[in-house]
Length: 226
Image (cartoon, rainbow, N blue to C red; front, side, top):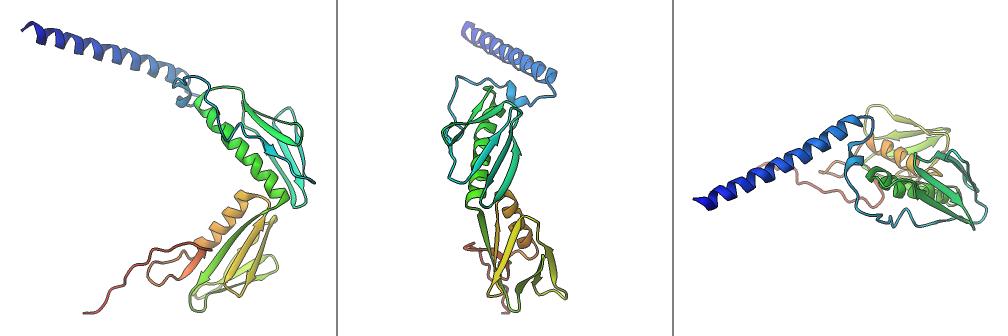
């Protein structure tokens, strides 16, 4: 009879300690409601960010300027891009390399460290080489044509679908069914391609619609009359 009582006392003590620890964490998170609750989780040691600590190489004919407030300006043969670093993230230029560092060890700042380095790398690559996204149109009578600053799409509707081409985007059409989207901003290029695809996403039965080049569509078998 003595052993079960000791076990029961031990379990009650363990639950009580866990409850106190959880209550303290809840109060601390509630006091800092303006900050992310993820910052209150402990981080054990300074783990390195393999992406964030990797320097960004600056190619020839590309100029990079970073001021004290974290504003990043990149200019190259393809164009110019501007962006501002998040708080507690700093960058510097030395020996044709961009180094990105973080000033805190919270979980959110660690996540922004690698993200900021990737965005800066995309800026450098965009002004030097540019980004390209290709689309394909599948369907009988489906076609596309560029007229001035408008992309006209014929997708089987009773009317053509016009799409206004953004300022920093170049769209070309080959063979009436192959659309190429080019630009210096990777995010904008991907967004424009996604907007064009959204007019008629590929359907699974006949495969008609607008798809990314090389995109695999899972086909379905239609109903048959028995």
